[in-house]
Image (cartoon, rainbow over all chains, first blue to last red; front, side, top):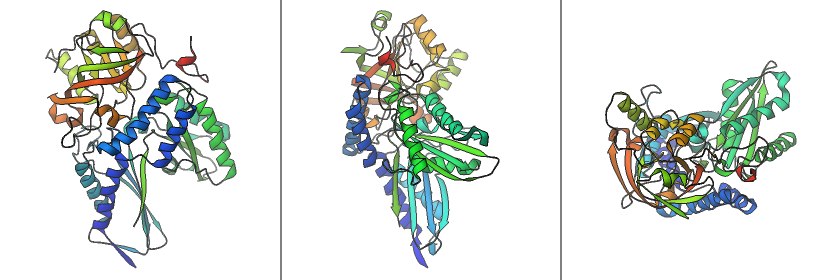
Length: 280
Length: 185
């Protein structure tokens, strides 16, 4: 049994939320630079240049990349041989969020009740997905997701007869409908299979996968490449202004499903998809 | 490059064409979902708005808190479509410029054509970059809303693209499966 103190979790989360909001993941920065190199539309190229400059300024000025510093989502893998000591693990995550958002001058965007809509004032609660795994480690995949992109996601429970073409059509229709709103160039996260809640979670995990890593299954990797090409052919472009690049990547995750179901979920990540993985 | 500074008149607006890059200087008011809802309620109840929209510029943003020594935190545009339900009310009262990101609906475009207003797109997600172009920020109404309060901002060389002009030309119009606006004649 290995012990991890809640203070360790608090500190890790606090540091992570400040860092991800001011430092763009290097794989995304590289993908933006590649998009600029390929861009033929002057307005889109102008925006990409501004976005690359924005990443430098955010780090230099210690000002968030985007004013929407998001709702914190933590995918937490807890080794079954870990003993969490000193308090509640979920409260430790929330305390880390509270501390980081205050200390880092990050915007507090969470309202307590979806109808009353009073701000909680500290950006809590975070959304925490915990999974028990083997071993004595704790892994936290921490994301801060803005609403501009999050609001454009969709989920459908397709009939199995719709097949792979039905899934592809749904992905395209979600991206088309989203247009310039989710801050393209976007990362398209797709879940296929499982059931209603599982497919949403798959899409959320897909959107956080590092750019450049394809799905390990050859057929799914080929579908990712095909959908990326078809999405970029839509011509939505950076910020919806047209041009070569609408999406930087398409990531698809699958899971076994019921013989009567074909669930599909699409979650969109903006060009500042903020995430980091921490091992404790 | 054209420079826009409030107060603006109808001719200033009719002079702008979709796709051109402009710089905004001077005073800009912020407002997003909750502030627009309150302004709409104020109008319905015959009360004054936090500012007179005549000839003015509104920027859809909810900035992050200002770190010490800075006028404002990150301050990029939010999705304008969420303000579509309210925008015509302000355009009817003389609002000349809206700054945000993403598409607008037909009602907003019709009001813009009728009253002579433009919609500018700022680069979404470039909040740190745009913050350097904001030299002062003061909350003038609805302070309890925090980031959603109405701020009076002073901006300098704030870059935008004319996304919808007063003639109804829309940079976001595109035919499915084809290239973007730049491919249209």
